[in-house]
Amino acid sequence: MSANIIIPVDFTKAAEKAADFAIQLNSKFNSKLTFLHIIDSEDNRIAATASLSAFVSKLSLGSFVSEQLVVKGKFLEDIGKIADASDAALVVMGTHGERGMQKVFGSYALRVVESSKRPLFIVQEESQFHDIKTIVQTIDLEKESVQVIRYAAALAKRFQAKVHLVGGKHDDSQFKSKVNTNMLFCIDQLKEQGVEFEFHFLERKHFDDNLIAFCKENKVDLLAATHYQSTFYAFSDKFVQHLIMNELHIPILTVESAQTSNSGQFGAMFG
Image (cartoon, rainbow, N blue to C red; front, side, top):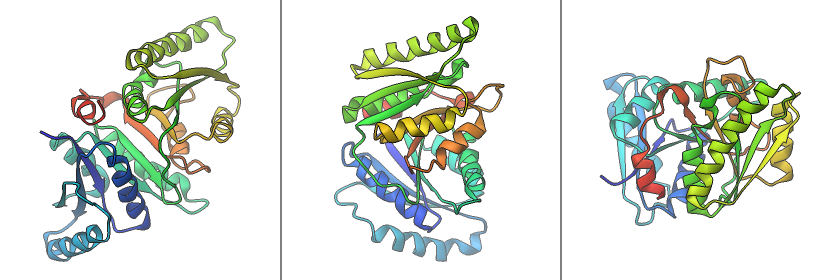
């Protein structure tokens, strides 16, 4: 089975941006693109099918293989289930929000993350596509924080990108040891893929703001962070939600730690 990228479509500008990103990503991979629209009633199928066809017809697909799916279900809850059922390699999703509403739209995206075993590439309505040359991977105390590294490493290898591993500074020896252990795990993964990398430790006070400042200084093209809910530490669901709606409009690659599955299809696409 060829690798498959799923693009959820709700006919918003954010969905148009996600489709644009998926197409440009796919210029290096030539995977199948699946445009997915979810309806809440069969009564809407005919109109939705026509709307999805019109949406796709405006895209510059070139010779890419693509398909259009209209499925009855719940948009946020069922995207992940459909991606899993189709053995998708990646979901490329758009998110949007006005000032004051960013947390709401960020949490919507997280509901998709939480329902899927597949990595999500999330872009904002204002995001601009750049060849991925610089990736920031966040590192935390929790061992789950490094689960996204295999996906980040695969992307970095394909794009010949440099990865910056970024964690928080700790004075406590036990906490420092945990972060260092996770950092070393990531370094091993990157060395195995032959990916160039650096590692950095930022001040933990206002860590998320310090991270965004680091991204701005280093002209980062992609943020990678594992999402997980059960933690007392900084990299909780709210942290990833904040990254999704970051003010620099940097796309984020994320995966739900509790539901991470075999990355065979992802490897097939990016290997």
